[in-house]
Image 1: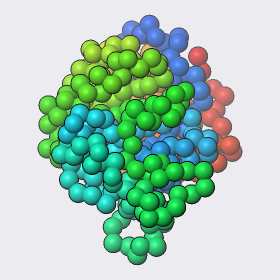
Image 2: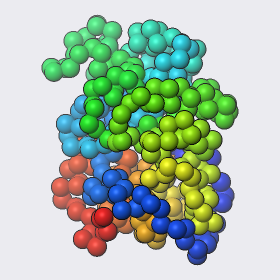
Image 3: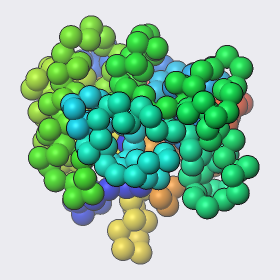
Length: 332
């Protein structure tokens, strides 16, 4: 999920009802609950490596990440590419929406053009050219690091990621097509993703979107692949003790939600425990007000979350070596 929290209904921060839903049939075999605190490389670890590139994915996995998180958009000619934003402006040397470009145009772009490993904003424009160490590798102006190729720094396709990492659990988030964020845009992209994954014989993928209709559409088209709920599914489960939606195996939510000037805790030990009782995994990402660092990681470990979607998989892996989750955390 994105680090910047999208619209989350006020319902999410109301007091939870006491009633619990029936334990789902998948409870005893939920694979996402059987690994202690997954190191989930968010966008491949976008604070340490260029976002959503094959280079980032390879480096994160080599450092110890055991799951990838990525975002998908759909090109003008219906091809699925891996990029967080609806436009290419922030990350690459191009301009415009993904939906306005063909795959050939997308793959001419430099996917690491604005990445800088220094500072707090790793995609800040306007720094000296020396601040962007991988700029030009994708286009052949600079040699790639040893063991990598120029294509590792270009905008990649989901098909290429699945081929490169056939046995790596991966979280795929459906994005929209423009900044208007219309539900119809998400449904268009959900349809495209379903066409691609319909014939992919894997069970180690989770599909998610902020828009519940996109999750529902994908699940209807490819029911054998697991999903995580959108905002509406989260709210229904958190409030009414109802179902988060068909096919759900994990919740993917932030640590906190800022409601006006009030900071509301979402990934609490009580909510995590309830999810576990009902057979769901709990995977946490970081909203703007959350700090993706050791203090937060420690609290998440102690709350028994199943996975942390971190922008710093290398640092997180170092942390994991010295801080184990409590022995009281239930593992099926």
